[in-house]
Amino acid sequence: MSGTVTLVNPSTGQAFRDVVRAGIEEVDAVVARAKHVQRAWAGIAPVARADALRRFARVVEDHVEELAQLEVLNSGHPIESARWEASHVAQVLNFYAGAPERLSGQQIPVAGGLDVTFHEPYGVVGIIVPWNFPMTIASWGFAPALAAGNAVVLKPAELTPLTAIRLGELAVEAGLPEGLLAVVTGSGSVVGQRFVSHPDVRKVVFTGSTEVGVSVAAGCAQGLKPVTLELGGKSANVVFDDADLELAAAAAPGAVFDNAGQDCCARSRILVQRSVYDRFLELLEPAVAAWRVGDPALESTQMGPLISASHRASVEGFLEGANVAFRGSAPSGEGFWLAPTVVLAGRADRIAQEEVFGPVVAVLPFDDEADGIALANDTIYGLAGSIWTENLGRGIRVSRQIKSGVLSVNSHSSVRYWTPFGGMKASGLGRELGPDAAEHFTQTKNVFFATDAS
Image (cartoon, rainbow, N blue to C red; front, side, top):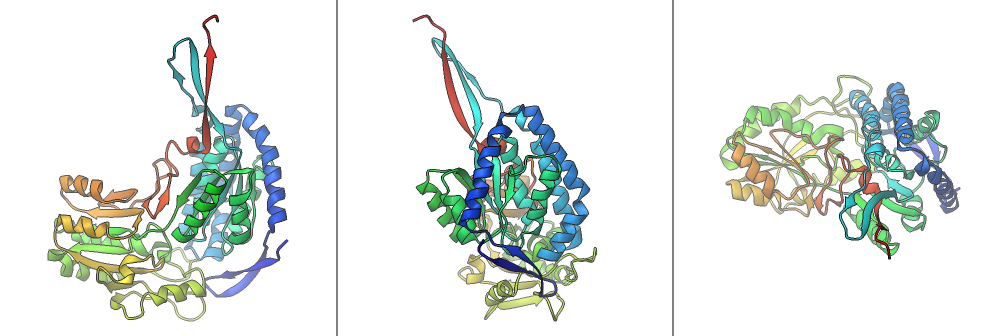
């Protein structure tokens, strides 16, 4: 073992538990066990895999409140959000429980015989999860991977491992073979890197920063293993002059301040057509003031603290010298609190280009449709975004021209487990979720059967 890491409650700043940091030897032992268990898991009837995943979903449903309370303690998520997240895990499991019996190959017409394809699992899949949405993002990987017949080794973030640990325990309680979904706690530089370099981990799924994602991809390339990357974002909330301004302004705080802005899909740039710029800001200010920041254990709370003192300092660094238009409110004292903040920014400003990952939004004007599209695309990222307009034609035109993987018109929706999710440009590689996710955890094998006599 490589020691322990001390967990801190972000609402109070108080340490409350130590968690083991695994070393390379422990990772190797877990991977060896997963490789052994996976062979039997892949060999059972598809209906049996489906039933096992449904049992797992039911057990998670029975423990929603426990999982939610862990997330409040460990991550500072508001309790209502945490309950939704725990229920979401069960829903994802239920959805992908339908996949084992639907991973159908093809019969391809050929001369002289029969040609068929099979979807075969990779074997052991390594999943590396960030600290901002520990439960949900983990399930986006492990549910379709298990459905496809793989074993999963899961590394949660060092700061927020508790719900992942508990989900691993619940999988065994539900009857999944021990070691099939193995949670390994520890540092990215040890556990995560070993997932990348281990020859028996045949695919890696990583969610985190673009900088680390590039390193993960480079390491996987050395081992010729596929990788799915869900990385950073600087998503635009584009408000045209024909939009319902009252609705757009009322919806804007939830699009960027949810989870204290610690969301790769956060609409951290609001781009407003110049002719309605002043009016939009007038409507936005009371909406920000009304955003409820406080004790995450209270059901009325909409936003909790940031994850750590160091992360709060990083977010505050973006505000040095910034033109702050107005702020909401937040508790003072213990805990890693920061009030929702609205900044008037220039196009080249750091705060308009880089991912802040906190409750800070930059507002910028644009002139016309072409200028709005160009401004929306003026970052290295391309994950999510929103378009507010009452003109259907404009909504279609603009959505086709903004280079982001997940867009909404007159909405801030980003993730549904039954639709694909993923980014363009520096926001990622590959897709998660949706009807084809389980297939992404398989390799296609082609087999030809000769029928002509030779």
